[in-house]
Length: 505
Image (cartoon, rainbow, N blue to C red; front, side):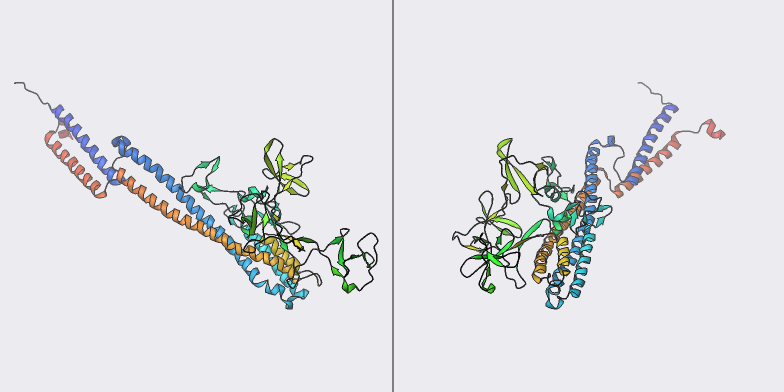
């Protein structure tokens, strides 16, 4: 039989080891209570630690996206405030400055001057509103938000980032670029790139170029007199003298001496009564219309279209026509199968894709892409109504209304004023569409915020399941560990006998 001698040192070493382990368990249980985590180091539970690391990254990303949503909501609120303030002025003008401006009782120059001053003041207020800021950034300045985007130049015309708004065109530079600026932020839609640019469906666009809100470019309107009757384009003799027709069919004009003479080289004086002379107007073919009476135009590719709310629609399908409806086109010298799109300004041609001046080759005539009126098959002709090109942006229109209102007696006409007011009210009504679009984006932000908050809560729950420990369980574990440690101390006191040094102490 083999005997094993157990010495006091062996007992002490074994006890010390066990006591250390018990103390370690107590410390681990204490940390669980303090931190609420099941483990403090990843090596204690590698699988849970790996899962926790993934969840932490997801949580941080969702928090960033939530911050983006909250910032976007504040930005959106400012944009909505701008639209609301601008709409209030537009509604005031559309409601009160039509009757007052065209009412016969206000024809006196003094009354009109007062209205002109009010309109001028509201025009300046519009510019101030359009230059609203969020922090240090102008909210309607597109991608260049560090400087005020809108201003009135010396001619009283509205400019946007240095460009006259009435000269901008959606199909030409710089208007094409200014209207298509975007500022995307990641809100958890799976932000992705498509052809070097952010895919619009994968991110939220916070940009709102102000010219989209107030209108840009010009439009052509038919001129009428104060009674609403068409004003026709007079036929001119030698390019400057209005023509008149006598009862016998001969044409006359009034020369520089005030005498009516024939329009031929003989210049025979008119011998009849001047009251028998009737104005002669330029003629144009009667325009073809569709079944609903809408005038038809023909595009450069031969498609018949009609115009509605500033857009062209295919007359055969009633769908928006997506071809070119402005500018010019020439063959590409480098590739006969391709064409170059141009626009004209001050007698020069510029490329629509980059805005650079283009020298048209000799013998080449740029093809006008503007849809042309389709003549009625009957071949009938009609007097050509006068047309006037006016601005489409609300700020310029307000300024023009003020200008017309302040014209002296004899030059002011109600219809001259109404021409601008009608276009202004159309633009003011379109502001509602912009407001509705902003409302839709606001709803999207609200829904996105709710989704991200729910996702954040779900991640937190998963994280707690992976690394957390129930408080009751942690306290119970700590109580048992503390009980074990105290019991170990009591056992040690009975096993380890006092030494000589203990007695001395």
